[in-house]
Image 1: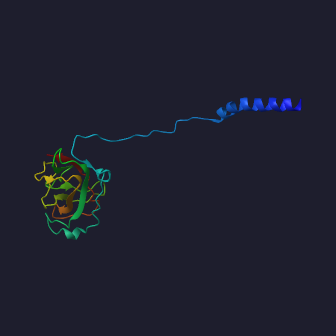
Image 2: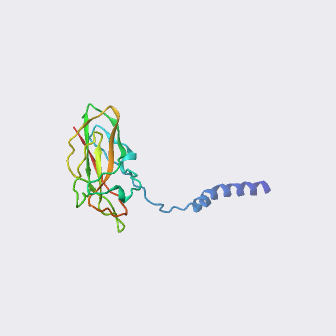
Length: 180
């Protein structure tokens, strides 16, 4: 009889275990995951690290701009292209778009927010030293190489007024790849 009760208890325990363990599970919404990407018909793709790039221009003193049109030292930066296939297209140019300076449309506006610097703009140059005028089609196309291609640029501050006022000199500029 004692053995019979033990068997009954064991069978009851085995039957009830899934019910008890199911009661312990709780499902709640945890959030959302967005996946962003772009499929392109182009010979290369821009390296992920360069899609939203920050170029540190550093601190520059106002007395480095004694007159309107004075350039300050260049800061080099690159845009990396990867998985390039030159059988598709074999040259590339980069167009830079953004807000041009109200006093000098050859450069981008610098300074964002209430504490923005005044009288300063930002010029972008290709590796030949040519100024890339904001919001215009580029003139120089550069050869692609199979695999990775690195495009070299530089950025310089330029005074757009006779007197530069200190403050934030950040610029937001977007770029587009143009393949031929």
